[in-house]
Length: 249
Image (cartoon, rainbow, N blue to C red):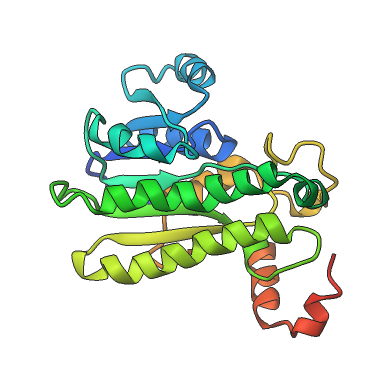
């Protein structure tokens, strides 16, 4: 885990967190505030976010804004009306539906696509196209190990995360000459409200605060896989022959 004392970027920044009501996003917000940054926390669930801000005593450091990743036609107005433009953008919006249920319910499948990919592309394109914001320096996307290889147990959710990762990979190349860094967090199982009730191996569960530490104190590389066990799983998945991937759950 990266320590705060190792973080070299101590100049206060403006941070925009999209999907700010997720457990990882909230933990990241707390760390950003600790580092002296100002945060715009954007989510559909503003009541819950406001309660979090009050409970943590962050009222002077955080502005809560309404943002719906799936309402594409509102994204331009949302960005134009921000109280200040960001140095750092974190896209952490998420939605999960069981694969079998999603196959029978198109709206759930489509919502995963809109939240994880379409909504991300919509708002991030608007952000990077703003030539008037010369302070933008970092974009971080929270993706998933489910998007590394297609597997029969979660290929709908995984495909949306894979698309998001590939978008960020191309965006990184596109923005390289502008010295804007793009990072993707390829996370394994996170102990959060989104995974509550799922039968997942406890030995592989990561705490939101652990992921958030990686988000805020981002290493310089593009792909970041938090957790030693998950790094091993990631590399195995990358090289595993397709016939063996097909035997995975």
